Length: 607
Image: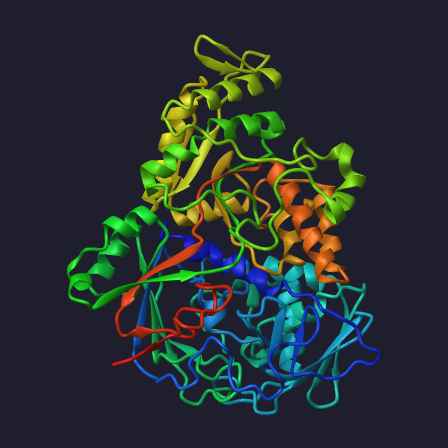
């Protein structure tokens, strides 16, 4: 699934950008070079560089990345249009900079310091006097306030929810900005530190929310867009006059002179482009493809090498999501039946050689994952008030079915049939039928370009036929797919949500009840769970790491036992094929591994 791994991940990493919480309180607020969820940042005020970078990396060269799909906008901060996902991270900066070696820590970037209220009612940033936009003009307090107000009112939905919790934003002296909140929320200070800062004067008399490829947003980033062709490519060049090159958070990063993003109609065309030398790198998410497809000429000659990048981040959720806005998927027994009919072991062996494990929960593969068996301790205490409303398995324990690996999956099909019968369905003349005699019918919507997803859906459809169910499979282009998924116009579709080691306010955008009707949220399943929202609130107000982890584990149970998604496998490692002269610090990988901020951010080209 090379085609959309980081397209979705880009959104999901925005989750991390909003997923840190203030830790510890002090009697008096004091300016600091950084902020951490619990205790102090790991790096002192005089640190030289982030630990996973090469501070002496050479500058130069060209890095070419491939993406499946198209784009019609260069503004990643609005709802309208399709935007290359990397632009949000490579072409823009915020007041603070996250460290991917510390999931709960931010350090100063455009802001030289941050000061927070011990009661979590305000945050104050002091701008670095050297901070400049790419056109050389200084970043002012007025630019910051305009950016916050604009993004919070007409920007992308990712900015709107937290802005509603800001009571006031005001200048403090010549270089300070203070945001006052209308509620005590320990995460808001960090969320506000990660808003992109734009140049106010550029948008005078221009409708910000309607911008497409006609305007290239001006930012303070190390890179500027220097060439593009809508739907074909975007090229960014390193700004030789970048103001922050010597900042500790920037030293050893942004080493490559030219970054080019090429767009392709499908994953096959993109892979051929990599084999032919047009692309510098290929991110392979199929273990089977990794073993069988990388014996081409450039690999044999040593021009291309393969790297395995382990990570400690949550698996997130990937698979087929069921839209509970549709009546047929509102009964949890039907959703469980659909999961029972999905023969993961057979599919994983057929398509991936069973190399990668299955996703067992939304936060599996991490310290935040729910434990096996019944809930205990603080997790059980948090779930207890909602016990009567929670689905079976949430408290007592829920695990996905494991088949014998045979194609027939007879045990799974029997369980699925029994669940359908409990829900009032029966098979009449070979067709699964509801009590009114209507066939159990639904549509699976696929985006053109992913052969692996197509294969999974085809095998699943064959299994469903044993239940008397024949889904309609519809394949559409990326533009139609975005339009339909934004409006939740599907019964079942492919779903991917990357989750971080520091989930926070963004979880409400993912799973909150507002997403049932509000378009464009991440709540594709349409879940409405007061218990889940209570766990998110508990996370945001946790006073210790133990309480925080308990709340996330409780949320993990609610999501997993909700049976909204039929999970597939995940990669506990990243598999990157790349030009041999592309280097990274293999001896000191960040905790997040191959994530936003890794490639090409901390890589360099060695001639």
